[in-house]
Image 1 (cartoon, rainbow, N blue to C red):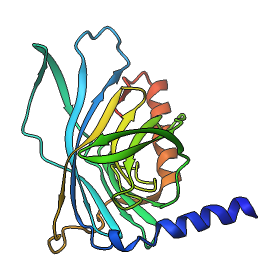
Image 2 (image 1 turned 180 degrees about the vertical axis):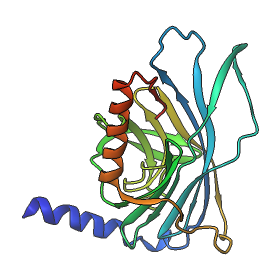
Image 3 (image 1 turned 135 degrees about the vertical axis):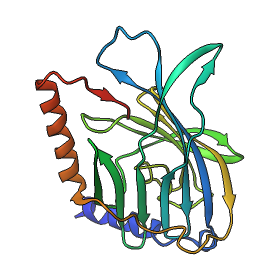
Length: 237
């Protein structure tokens, strides 16, 4: 009984924001950089996914959306790096309703993936650092065959269940994420507190409706089929 009641009580506390959070609304801009893992390891040119996203939020909802990217190439120490566009994933979360809706594409088809908003299996650490002037604490997530390992930095000065993509289940706002020990990073570049415009924050629509478990099974089954058929599998996140 204890193992069931404790998470419920913790979630109840996080889903009823303190008075200081009730007036918080605005936009967090993130930068994503992810190194692609190619099946063909003879390719000597590093290839990256680069992009910017915005997290639009109020006291109960958040919407993580991609921003247009006008840049074509990037140079580091004089070396040109080929880049690919970040996947156009839209993630909506509602703390009061305890649910998430992700709009994504896979092999040219659009999906609406629903899931419950629940406390993640994070291991809270003791390390701290400042990001954009906020005191942040560290948390880690052990990866598996479907999900990458993560190291996140979050601040309790902003409301819980706030962060990029699926990294939004900590007792504060996540401002930086390290993916698979440096293979990728998502880092907050700017936080703007402002009143949101009408319809600026709303759940995405359009696509085949599936649960998270159904969608992950679809992806794994298709990837396995591609491998058996000799397809060139590329993993970007």
